[in-house]
Structure formats: C-alpha cells, structure tokens
Length: 137
Length: 119
Image (tube, rainbow over all chains, first blue to last red; front, side):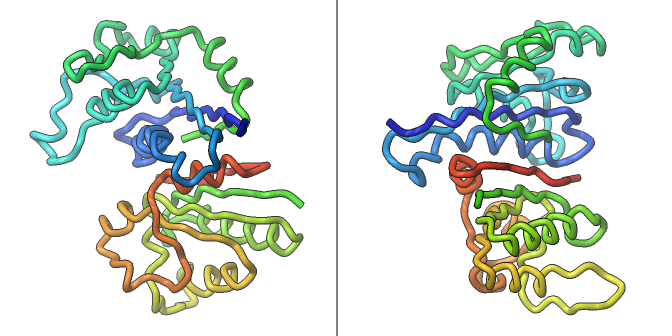
C-alpha cells in the first residue's frame, strides 16, 4: 500500500493582498489529478485552512466575473467542496473580523454534500500536526 | 541524502526571495540532495529564454541553466506562464511545463518542502 501524504495548506493572507491565497486553493484542488504522477495506492490528501486575514474574502455573493472578468474566490471555494476537500475556517478569526458563519458559501447548487467547516484554531493546529508538510500561503 | 522540493512564487524582478530560492536550491544540490523547484505565480515569468543579464537586475536564466545542469528538476506552472504571455517555444530548454499536480507529486516524494515568497 502506498503512502498517503497529508498536507496542510494554511492561507493567512486575504485574496485582495496577493495572488498566493488563490493559488493555495487551486493547488489544493490539484490533488484530484495527482494520482496520474504517483504509483498505485499513493495519495496526497490536503486540508485547506484559512486563518487570520485569510478568512477575509470568503463571503458569498462575490461578483468577480461580472466586474473583473475573473473567477471569484467564492467560485474556487465551491470547487473545493465539489471535489470533497476538507476546508477549515478559523472560528476565532471569523469572530474577530465580525463575519457571521452564514455569510460563507456552500456548493449545494453544484451538488456538493461537503460543507466548509468552521472550527476552533486548535483543530487547525491538529491538522498541521497531522500533516507531513505544512505550506503557508 | 534527502529530497527537497521548493515552491517558488515571487517574481524574478522586485523580490530577493526568488534569488534566495535559487541559491538555496544550488546549495542543497551541491551537497548532494535531490532538489525539485516548482514555479507558480509571478515566478513563472523567469522561464523565458534569452534574458539579458544586466548588472542592476536579478536574472534567472543563467542560474536556472546551471541548476538544470546539476540535475535539479525545474517545472513551471503552464497556466501561470502562458497567462504572462510566454509560450513553451520561448522557454528555457529542459525546464518542464506542467500543472499543479506536478508540485503535489514531488511533495509526495520529498523529505522537506519549502514554499518561498509570493506576492
């Protein structure tokens, strides 16, 4: 049986401050196709976590396509749920910035059962401890 | 000896983090470690061939070519690269072009992973 390498993608910058926050999401989604480059049974399992200012810009109702002609972070987040990624949002930081949990998107309209998980930071820390590699964006 | 994979995101010009990533890769390869470099975001602009090495600016090509000669595997995110107007035919020889899963696959085989910079 091949190794299942767990990764923690930690997004700590808001999407409007740089490109890497968005790249964290797309890189995490790429786990869906990594098997074509691995041996049988080998897996990569990312957990995508948003902490600090990284929780800014996750709200639903974004109009990036209409206004800027680019895919919104909301749309990328929906795709993570569609491909069954575990996405953890730091509860304490949502409270800090006054973002209610019901402002976060889901992907029910795309048929995804997976939901964003608003969790205490301790759970995100556990995801980092469980991961073989932690990548900070 | 171990395997090190570096994700490099900052642009060639305007950030010293790019230079640091390449120097670190060189040091690790010189010590005998297997090194992989993944370019994403603005770092992908550095894979264009025929860079003129002006003394006042950072340069990528000279050092990338040297790293390739040492056996370092370098891959650029194809989508990020073509989005910056660089075609594969214009790229530095032997630099690979692939998608983000290349990076994840290299991470799978790595002892250490570093993600450097990024705007």
